[in-house]
Image 1 (cartoon, rainbow, N blue to C red):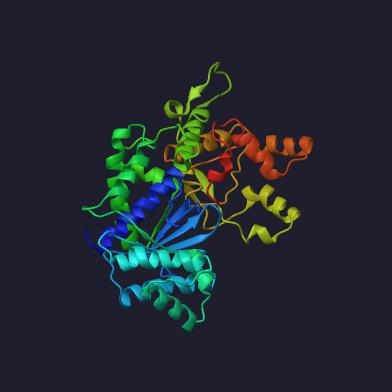
Image 2 (image 1 turned 90 degrees about the horizontal axis):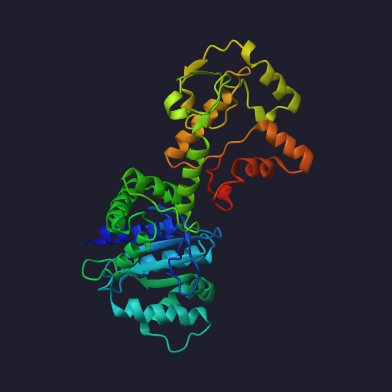
Length: 380
């Protein structure tokens, strides 16, 4: 496994931690649970960036069979500068098996010693590192408190960390026997993330696995990918039927759906800058506007291409049914979504004194099986 593949394996291990909500434990006893995993950032770590649950940023340089020399010094000093200047909270030099023990053991121990305020009994390489920090006017204590060297066993000859990642995936999959295939999917995806300089979060990891026919268990809600899958399943169930006047029973949206279209008109100006009265005037006068660029679209694309939209139609035309179908469609694609009646939200705000967000999420998600489900929703 070459250097790029070692980097991909380290990235895939981070993806598993992100999906399962488990700490990477790359920085001694610190809890480091990633919510976003980035590749090739151009930052202090460059190879991998992690955004952690507490908002801190960590960056990783992944090096295969590293030796003391220019490559090592460049990598570790880049991380040191990032920590010192506050660009990142944590920096990691991730090394493979076969790396010089002078680095993997000696310098790693020296960094822990310097972090504790001790500069005695350092190895020659540790002394050289301390001298470089002083010459660069970097705080040795601050740098070493956020810096670590970690051996990641992710080579064919030493794959203990890969096996541990597969074990974690077993708790995520509906069929634990699929864990090995799930690892292969994430490893291949990690290589693509590196090539495309892209990123993943728990929700997109869940979608990736589902697209590959890998079922996610609805068991441990502490795993963000499990929580998202459970919310999607609940949303599909709660938006699967609708009623029409004159029919005594609910109809299946999947079986009785009649395709409709909607006409899109973009606002004349940004409504955020308008006052309430002006916004209401535009809302009520929407149908009277003659806009040349108005076009008809499939309403099920709302939210994908029109991130902020108001659906306007007369009573009984099917607004609520369209939104139910839209919610179920997104949930089927493993995109977390919430739907609530605006009238019910207004009533709750008036009667209970709740904010819009409090009322909306209580109505939309209060009965869901996922605690604090609103945290799973994508931002606007």
